[in-house]
Image 1 (cartoon, rainbow, N blue to C red):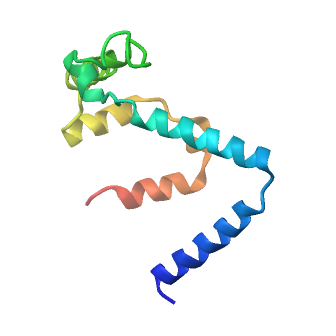
Image 2 (tube, rainbow, N blue to C red):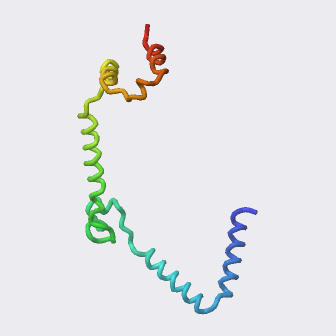
Length: 126
């Protein structure tokens, strides 16, 4: 069975079911279909028009007037994040990293651990 045959069988089944409905239900379905077609026939405004200041922008089109500000706010936040990341000091040299780690206080359980000395002796280059 191909898709066309399946579509025909489904259509026949739906038509049969619709023909056996009450007249009030059929009227409500017809009214709902007309409403959907009217809404579909209305012109739709795209986001590009809102961004460019066309008919969809501003207070019309059913969208918030702040919707066009979202990309600008995201751009500013991204630039602030990049600026912060670039201005924070970064430790690139291994000696700086080692000095920083050695300058920190070790937790007490690291000093008490019997395997710590063994690990420390095995990790030092000879």
